[in-house]
Length: 271
Image (cartoon, rainbow, N blue to C red; front, side, top):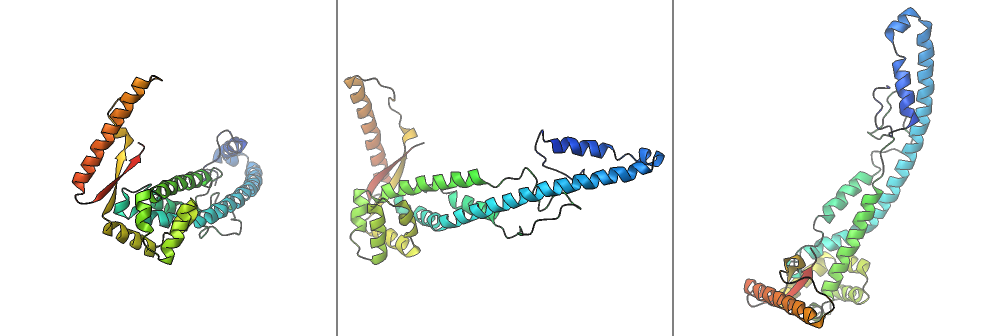
């Protein structure tokens, strides 16, 4: 039992107590003084009782945190699906946070309570239940990170869909589902944008962009190869602006060659 205890926090008095108790299980000493065995076993029972109480408190809190995170993640589900559908439309350029839907599903699996009963586990026979130790923590930081990245990705898509050329194409259609999406874009509401991005809307937008022969091409700002340092002198500013204008012109020409007969829009991306 003592040997099977894993995940005790570093420097925790419980670890010292466990080691001292474990050292008292000496068969030779028990043979010489049989009465010592009963005393050590009684000490083990006391230790188990204290550990069990602490473990159950930790388990209850851990399960409560998972329930909170599971609820938060489920509220994000439609937004994650909306982002995934936007990423499937090639005419809108490359995917934004393409790995996020998979990470979302993995996090949701980790936060599910399906295998964690509400009844407190009994750990007097075995010290660990479902591989949960005293150091096991709910992935709150990971959920925070995913939620933040999802918000930034949807904001990026919102700006893109609000682009004058794309908005003009979308406004040609009077379908009710698309109208709700356009209202979300106009209100700069990323939540509604994602939730209204249904499969029907995604197919409609794809068709409209294809009919308009409008395509978005991603351009990484890290590809910029001109001067990047300047002071407050007007000449330096003009030189950098001219170099950047040349860079963008070159990228537009390259995109047009790669997409003959189409109207090209550049989507500038950091990194």
